[in-house]
Amino acid sequence: MLPFKAFLKEETEPSEGKLKHITHAEDHPLYDGAKGFKKSMDVLRQASNHIKSGGNSSALTMKYDGSPAMVFGHDPESGKFFVATKSAFNVSPKINYTHEDIEKNHGKVPGLANHLHQALNHLKKIAPKTGVYQGDLMFSGDDKKETKHGVSFTPNTITYTAKGDEADRIRKAKLGIVVHQQYHGDDVRTMKATPHTDHKTSFKEHPDVFHHGADHDTSKIDYSHHDQEEFHHHMAAAKHIHDTYGKKMYAATAKHQGDGGHLTTYINHTVRTGEAPTSEGLKKHIREKYNKLIDKAKSEKGKKAKEAEANDHVNHIEKHKEHYDHLLTMHHHLQKAKDTLVRNLEQHEGDYEHHIDHTKSKPEGFVISHEDKPTKLVNRKEFARQNLLKVKAWKK
Image (cartoon, rainbow, N blue to C red):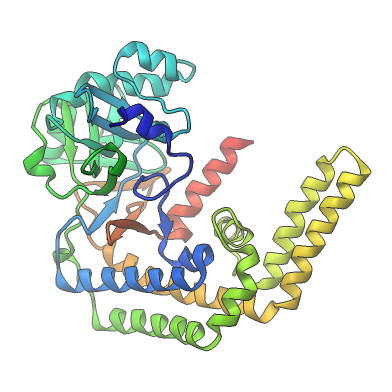
């Protein structure tokens, strides 16, 4: 049996069973063509049915804007307690069993190291005796602030405010976390992430740690007949494009599909700018990206090579313009169907008020798990745009 560190070392990409990246519901076809379209339809239908049923389970959860993501629990081989960020899944994993490990692995980032020190001190007080879990850190130490409305904390983009009994528990706590995933398997080689289903019964209580699961209670949502019709209208429109043009459309656009492909980076670009995605916009986006690469090229030969690559991409899109426009229109209908679900899910905001820059906002979004694989349902015009702009500003 491999030691836990060796197991994690094998993870070089966001891969099967490891929760490192969650795809937007409407983006699956941009990653995986026809197979991705089926995934989008399946997860959106499942989410719609879940809302109609008024259920409350780990199949549909609220997405919390915590930071950092925290992986923690007991090493399956040694039984030793550890804490880590998503860097636990790096090629060279960073697993922290001791405070010395934290300083060695994260000491150059004092804020992060402080969170990990607090997590190592306190999460063991509530964690089950076995198992590995993942959650979002909401606060630690002095991150909390008293306001006229209650107790607030801002782990990332959203400021959360709790009132009443929840606020009293938070005031006493030294750390807060929302747990949403559990890693499990017959041995470390088969360990996979699945939604955590029994938070209340498996985790212990301790005044030093404020914690809860992420299940979203849809019994408090009024999913109107009008909204259900709107959802089905956009789903049918997306399916019509898939059925009519799919075979040729996916083949023609495959050049720009996939993780990190120009289609996905372009969609994120349109989220930032607010523009409607089109084949013309995609060509412009690619041309602008390559212009930057051309400017950075040190030799004339390098500049010409990048110019040739750009021309190849742009000419391919022009040749298959109709297919790219069909794909982006289909993506639009999938997004509109998802937006209808998100608008309804936002009727119930959980136990917190949400603000972004002192302006009332909605939750970050939601996650639907289909066949134990998560997909996110997010209002990209509001929250995803805020996050993308924040990342862009940070990189400047």
